[in-house]
Amino acid sequence: MPTLEQAKAHLRVDHTHEDDLIQRMIDAATYSVADYLDMAHEDMELLAPPAPVEAAILLRVADLYENREAVTDRSLHDNPTFARLLAPTGVCRYEGRHARSMGDAGTAFRGAGRGWPALHRLDAGV
Image (cartoon, rainbow, N blue to C red; front, side):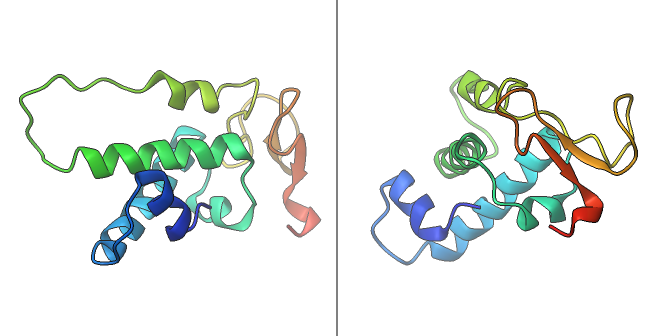
């Protein structure tokens, strides 16, 4: 997961008075990415995410930081880079929790090419 220091560098924040807020945004962004990947939130903390996943988390943090108000007078759009970073060619959706179509029940992750990881078994003791 991205650290507070990494998130602050990404946001170009050099003070400490928003550290708690930024940490909560990191946590929320991590949950958002886990949900997008259909992963258990706890699994995101156990596995070291690859660079595209960390970059997607940092994009979410920046979005949360820049758009803190519930109401705005401007149009908001999803950042297509977020989806591209987490596309099937980089990271595939979590297969184990819902035991969908492919593979045996012990398979937690399936990668496509550069996937994260290409195959990770729950019984392998992360």
